[in-house]
Amino acid sequence: MVIEMFNFWYFFWLVFIGITCTGMYYLLRNKKEKTKKIVLFSILMFALILHFLKCFFPPYSVDKDRLYRDIFFINICAANICLFPIIFLCKNKFWKDYMFYLGLLGGGLALIYPAEPMLKANQAGEMFDIIRFYLHHGILLMVPLLMVMLKLHTISYKRVWVAPACLLMVMLFIMLNQVLQSELGFVPLRGDNFFEIGYKNSAYIWGPDDAIGNFIARFCPDLFKTVPVDKFAGQTKYWPWVWLVVPAFVLVTPLAFFLSLIFDADNFKADVTAARERCKEILQYRK
Image 1 (cartoon, rainbow, N blue to C red):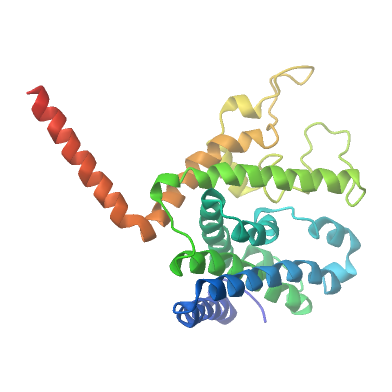
Image 2: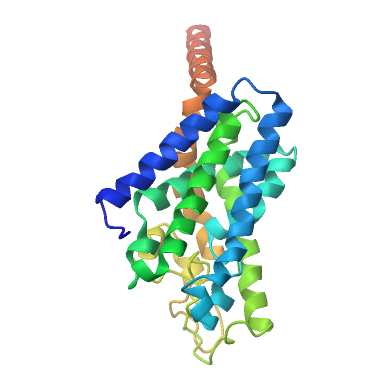
């Protein structure tokens, strides 16, 4: 099984996840709410267990350094695998909004452009990890979508700000994971180079280090990518985590808004109509 853009296996997994999601919806739509919650929570717990099972299979079972690095929750999707079961059980509508938006965005984008499996030098020898990749990202996409489609949670376009705000909090969770990795000896401590980002940067917390990161950096104010004091003052260095605040709101909010319209278009139309009528009343009053 070799994954390449638009080859058989690329479409196989997209179709498989689509059929699975559709089948789960029709299987659960007439079930009791308790049954729906048990099934979806069980799927999320399976994903969490699968995250730790990967340590028994290549490449992690034969590469201790990679195992120590990746067994922690060091990127957004891995963090969501850890946090989604907790969010699903909680009654906080804001975090469930985050679960919906970032599940669809993170899981969906990873499936559309599966960079991780395509970049593997030995796809045949790491088949389990490729299957894990698709199961994980399929679940990140499928469970939040089913949660809303099965009416276990209601999306409102008025709360789209939750997506970037909660994402930034999850970034702090990832940052804590990475600090613990270094401080507990799982990965090497940072060297003496003040400007070196290091390799623990899959969530761009420490700054941009590839084309996607450089695109995100376009929306970062210069203030947050400049050393403010000391001997390196004025030189370019991205403020850890802080540099992502503005890009998160600028880039994620519109995407979340468009996703919200899938399920909340009627309320949006009604509010736009009401606002238009209100504007007419104000203009007539001024005349």
